[in-house]
Each structure stands twice: as C-alpha cells, then as structure tokens.
Amino acid sequence: MRPHERGFRLDGVHSWFDKGIIIPTDPQVYYPSKIKTKERLIGTNTIMDVSTAVSGMQPFEERRIKITINILDYGVIKSKNTQQKAMDVMNWLYFPTGRRRLELDIIPHFYFRGELQEGNDFETNLMEYGIAEVYFTCYPFRRTVDSKGEDIFRSFDFKNGTRFSKQQWALPTRDKFSVPLKVHEVGDVVNLAPWSQTFLQDREHGVTTRFHLYQPKVIKSIRISTIGDTPNVIDKTIYTFESGEEVWAQDILESFVDITSKSPEVTIINDGSVRVKPSMRLINSGIFYAGIYVELNGERHLWRRLSDNNVGMNDTMFLEPGENKLRFIGLDGTIKIWIREEYL
Image (cartoon, rainbow, N blue to C red; front, top):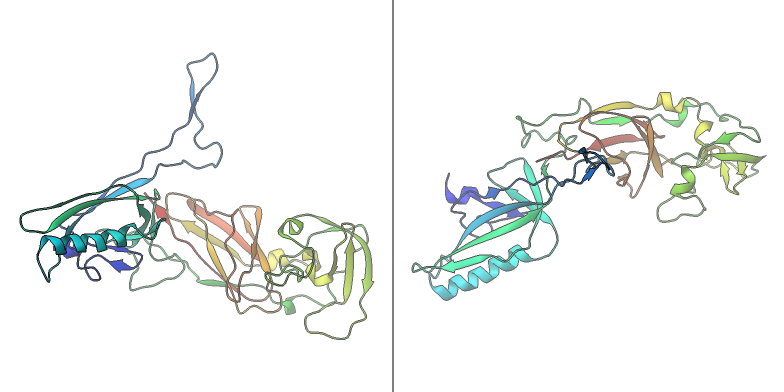
C-alpha cells in the first residue's frame, strides 16, 4: 500500500489529496472497553452486573485512534518550513472542537466521530521533515457511511451491507375514509391525531403539545360549525374536551375508522451491534402534515414534522439489533426511513 493510500478524511478534507500529508504507517484503531457496574448481593458471594439496568444496553468507554503523519513542505525543505507546515496541520486537526467525522482509507464504508484531545509528539530530524503522532478520542462505535435505505450502488458495502426491500411506503389517503367521519358521543374517550392542525412547528396556534397528544381525551360537548366550505376542513363537526381543547373531527385519531389496519407495516433489520436512531422523511404530503405515529413493537412514538420534506428525529424511538416491526400511522403522503448502523 502506498503511503498516501493510508490517509484519512476529517470533515470531508483528505490528508493527502487536500493537505499533502503522507501517512507512513497504517492508523492504529483501538477497541473500546466495556463499562461495568457491579453490585454484591448482601450476605452472599454473588456479584451482579447492573451495567445495563438503566438504559438496557451495554455502555462502552470512548475508543482511541492513533495516526502517525509525516509533515514536510515539499516546496522548500527546511526546518522552519516544516514547523510552519506543522502549525497549519495541527490547527486543522485541533479545530473546531467537538467530535468530527473521521474516515480512514483502510476502513472503507465506515466513519468514526472523534476529536483530537491529547498532546502530541512532534519531532524533526536531520532530513528536516517532521513526524507527529496524533490520537483521536472517538465515540465507541463506527457508523456506516451510506445509510440503509439510500441504496447507493456505487458505494454499497457488498460484504456487510443489506438493503430494504422497498425504499418508501405510502400512507392511506383521505379518500379511503367516508365523510362525514365517525361520529363520537359525549363521554367518549378519544386521542388526538398526530396531524392535529393545532400542532404545528413554527405557527402553533393552539394549546396542543406533544404531552397532550399522548393523553386520552374525554368529549364534553359537540357542535357543528357554520363556516363556509374550505378545503382544509373535511368534516365540520367540532368537539370540546373536558380538558378545554376544541378540535375538528379530523383532529381525532378515532374519527378515521380502521386507520391502523390501513396503515403500512414494515419490518426493518438492524444488522449493527447496537440500537440506533432512525431518520424519516414525509414526501408529497397533503394538508395533514404536522406529524405521524410510529408503532414499534407495540409502543407508539410521535414523530413531528420539522420542515417541508422532513420528519424530525425522535428521542424515544430506537431500532434494536435484529428485526424491528413498525407501523406508520398517518394520512396523505409517503414515508421514507433510513438508518446508519453501528459496529465496534
């Protein structure tokens, strides 16, 4: 392997092609240690491992990556030029602070998230070039460069990669449900739909919050609106809850009969070693655009729309290693989902 083929890319900038730095030896990738928390049962010789008691997953220490670099100004081979080159290189490696994307040429298809934190050795010799050893402190797991779900053939990892059988799934449309919508009675217990029109990102004009969307509602009174026809209202029935909110019929999930069974069900396999957060996009949606529910292994998670083409990250939903069954509960539009798998 030629020296410049052992390079690395930091936030998209390559050590050789962009900085002219030769890597004389392969980078050394160290594996992280497990973080173990152990408790002794009182009065016994039994030691219990409680490392996974809180999060349900094994925590790891950060990992280290050692890179040896050859610093030389090829235009003028003098010590002062080498020192100037070293200053430029170190400023590139050290700043900005925080974890940055680190890709190694010897490990294709994956990247690390790391930061140069430790002091480094730098020495010049009689040939007036410098050798520096730098250590990156990294997130313990490497991540796939290409997300599962993007299906980029040119850079596909044929050894470790897998692909989705489909790339996107259509949500049921409004014309699948008869109008007027299902009629509710006073005293019925219902739930707000994730697309509730009072649940908007930058122009929230009601009191509905993420908390309210998870709470059952009791109908206190019912009336029919007298407003004229408008394309944003498909049923003029208005319900008032005992908690004070007043919503259209279309803002109640149960108004759409059998919406759960009409919603797409998906099985996604996480081939990585640890749970990961998925990302989603809602494409070509209609007026019901504020959010969707995702049922995962029997638990319902709310995904709120953040922009015209995206559904924001959810802090409560993870895809475990292996098989994950999901159901997308929403109206109008197409869902696309992708994940970056993680390995040691």
